[in-house]
Length: 254
Image 1 (tube, rainbow, N blue to C red):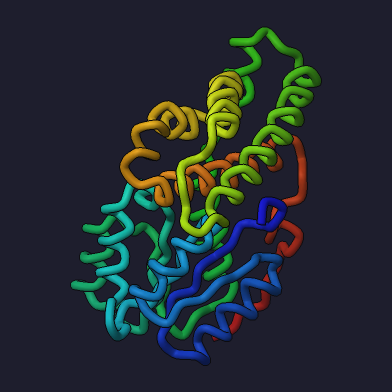
Image 2: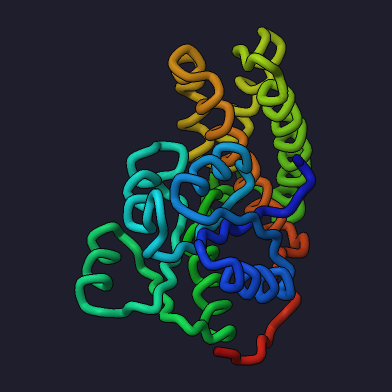
C-alpha cells in the first residue's frame, strides 16, 4: 500500500452514477474507492487510509451525506478530510446545510466533467499544505535549494519506512501496539517532521503514546494517512508526478 497513489472515495447509492464518477476520475489519473452510503463510507475509510478526498451524494439509505460529513468532522483522523457534495438538489436549505458543515464545494447533478475536475483539483490543493513553505524551512536551516531537496528526498524514504511499519501493525490480527523498535522509529520520524515542517504529523507523533493506549488501530490509521499525505506533499515539492496533473483538459459532459 505504501507505494499506491492517494485515492478519492466516491459515496453514491446509484451504481450508474458511481460508475460515471469512477470513469471520469480514473481517466484523469486518480485512484478511486467506492461506497453505496455513509455507513459503508466510514468502513471504507477505516480500511483505506490513502483516501485524500470524499465525493458524496446527499440522499442515500442508512446514512445520508449530511450524516456522513458530521461523522467525519467529529473524528480527529478525518476532521480535515476535504469533501465535495454532489446532488441533484441545489435548493437553498441544502446549500446552507453544506455551509454549516464547512463544505466549500457543492456540485449539481447532472455533473459537468470539467467543473467536477476543477473542484477536485481545488479541494486537493486546499488540503495540500502538509509542509511549511520551502523558503521558510530553507531560511531556518540556512539551506540552499539543492540541500533542501536532498533532505526532502531522505525524508521521503523515512516516511516510506514508517508507512511500511504502520501497515505492518494494521495487518496484525488482533492489532496490538507497535513494538519498542517501531515506536523508536516513529519517534525519530517526529524529529524529521519537525525539520521538514510537517506540523500536523509532528502533533500526531507527539501524542502517539497516549493515542496508542486509547485506540491503537485508530491511532495507527490516523498516522498512516498523515504519512501518506506528507509523502504526497514531498513528492509534489521535489517534482514527482502527481495523479491527475497530466490531464489538463477534460471534455465537458452532463
